[in-house]
Length: 218
Image 1: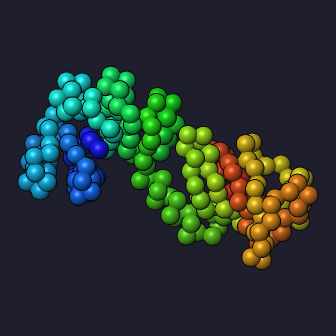
Image 2: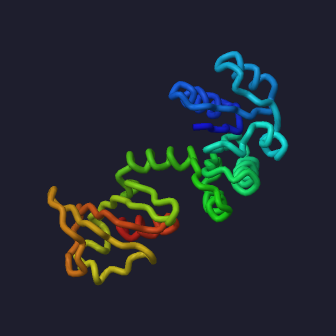
Image 3: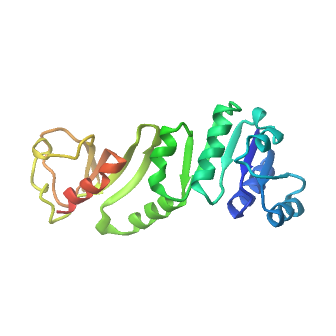
């Protein structure tokens, strides 16, 4: 597989190193001379010095035959431009962009970027899993559908405790799938009565997480 990595910082360097160790053909595009020289010293002649936001540089990199283009510069706007050019001008099958601001994720998806990686989101998910008060644990993100599968605890103070599921007004586009009680798992039928301490497996929109959390804690 031929992978073009735009950005030769720490993320780009270690990504390229890992891919090379796994036997893939890799080219790193980096405009900073010191960074490109360091990569050449460490990894061999796998660097093209230049600005990956320029179509001529992408052309020199042979992006038209790349299987994947990964943009991991420190600038979200640059990463978007790189991936869009790779996708639309050079018909690259898959583009992946690093995003620093999680709010940009929706924009990247709408503009056709195949996948995004946000270190901020990854760290926040780990923090949330360590804080019982947050009540939500991310199980799986269905990015193409903007949906998340989450595990949610019913707080002793929650207003939903003691109510049947059909009596509860859930956030829009939220569906409770499973109720786990005393180690036993049940399908979440409309007439099931929720109790404090129940664990719920729910499907919800990313932007509705806050509402679901508030409902289960209130």
